[in-house]
Image (cartoon, rainbow, N blue to C red):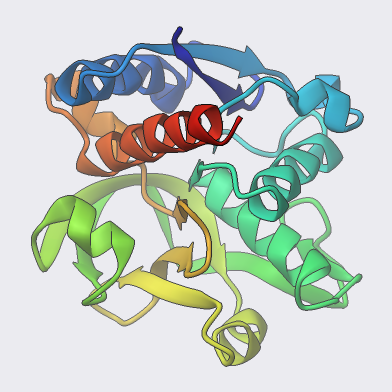
Length: 239
């Protein structure tokens, strides 16, 4: 029986990442020897946890603002709290930060500056330099899950975003060690985060899925697929 991954986002084939993600999952599934099924889950179709049942993993995909930010945040919170493998890229990274700030740090007013420019506590803010259709170096933090997935100290990855992590979040969120920095850029700006006590919870501002459009298996996607397969196996053994 295939493992089922929810692609949380509002599908638009004009978006490069949306064309790349199914291909990335196919390549990763073949490389890992995993039978996989990916299903698009529109954000405005997520109203409660019943809409999230039956999925072995969740990928919150690029191209925000979403039709329903609340739906995306619910899916992210579901994956985080229920220890389901989670990958967030670009907009998925941004909303993972908002969800963590609200649900774990207790910042009910935490928000995203793109949709709430006057937010009293913006944890996602405009980047000093836009990263729309550019590639830049990414430097991995030693000992992290994402560093293990890539197996190198640094790599160049592509972006399509104008918003990134706000300083108010960086100053507080990593203090207790539950959330850690997975990667930075050459200016030490955070480009990936991950949770320690979770089977797989990784979010990147860059878009690793783009490698699939060059026929390459994205290492992080492969690590995500392995985590999904491992989680499904553990669930069957515990049943």
